[in-house]
Image (cartoon, rainbow, N blue to C red; front, side, top):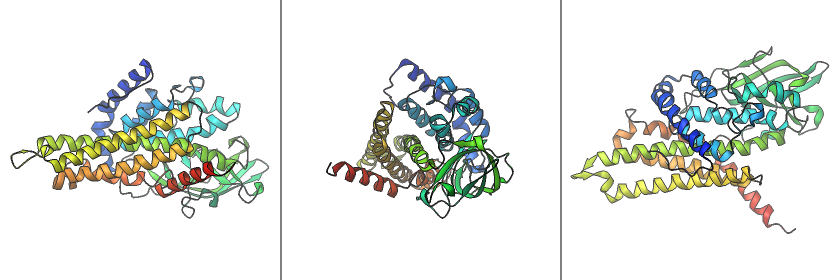
Length: 385
């Protein structure tokens, strides 16, 4: 059922209405089939770009929607409620546009950003490496300066849209900038030596392509450096704060769908002469699911409103990511339980939702990492000044 939202402006209400119309007409009918076929929905991203939904949080001066994060995230949630892979794709695309929007040169913002935020180009974000896991400072893929610019080599792992994207915001070690020097680069797949590995075979989100990116002595023009050289890690971490809010919204949308499926089933399925929703054991389960969904939504909105107000929101972003993705895992698991044997079959979407929820607890920093981040913030705040 539609979520009753508190939105800041009439324009935002119209945007949510448009999103629901597009999502119901274009996303919901395709989601199960595309996921089953492990088919990447590039035409859906093109449609969303034409509708102006691919660059909502970016300025109108560069072709974006000029919307606050509070509104953008609720659009992402609405899309996720119909198709999590697509909503995740928009979150990743936003993450990929962030470095140039925030740290790019005037020429980069003028020449590159309009096509990116307008959705005519699809982005990917290359930070992780197979051996480094949650420690981006341990990356080994590198870029060495030469007379023409840079030469990049190594491999980036777990790249959403890997092999499908038109541009890749890529973080590489720049050895001349010190032991921990990392820089950000805008790479495109037409560069010689740039290639994507075979896509990963995943448990869920199978409509979203994930693949390693290989850099075999890739010549990178000097003007592809984004931000100051050696400052890439700070760019990456700043981007991850907003990316964690995107994942939070995706998780809430997925959980909302699981709740809706469970409620619809429970009011129709009868046992012992009455709908199972009227049995206290099921009713309490549904109530806990609803509480988890609404609590998670409120948590990501608190963080988004802090971001929109220009306040620090790093701790709140980690809390939102932790709360929302744990909630999604619990709610989708409980949805399968409400449906019983039917929930374990592919005749109903509950089992797919459960598989999709699991990875939410892993990407954009595992939930164990989120607990570490939150703990460090608490210790820092309590330290004597």
